[in-house]
Length: 270
Image (cartoon, rainbow, N blue to C red; front, side, top):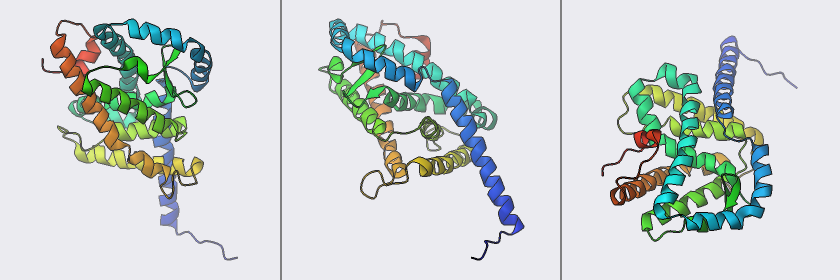
């Protein structure tokens, strides 16, 4: 069998590509792991116990007024977005390459999307419920007569379920989160080319990582990468639904105080 002959410049390119890949994956995964609120083992442990407490927790949530439920969800979301902001800051390419104004734009537009991605880690495929605190809870807990809120709830649960079904590794979820965050088409960005280059580097790394663990098509002839990319419009829809629901709620309850970071990231006109 003839041996493959690599020219020096081909060897250099292969080495350079591998170094870039290792750098992107290593730093992105480290940033992700360092900012997770719970490990997968802890989530599994809480899920096994949480199913026994689900009915009691559902009853507790149902006793909350609409104001109280919004406040509780906002406080829980506030903890998640603090972790997501830290995740972004730990990405070396985020702080070193991007203008501060662009960092703010990306966080304001991407934080809720990344919180929905992280929600998929807490979705229990066996019960169709999600870990809320230390107990599993069903979508029924969030049923509301407000149309936009209900659409937000159902879309978020469907998205979490669909993402959980893909069985992504933490590395793959980390890279897809970074890819979604560093979206060059966000309105108001100045350094679009820099963000585009970072986005493409992450997409390339994600494709390689998915090729290691998801060799078979996901559904039919659709790859997991294609299925993931097809979820991006739903992430955008979730973000818009959240802002629309929040805006309507804030108009009806203008005096309810939300956490400061929540108000800063998700500012609405009353």
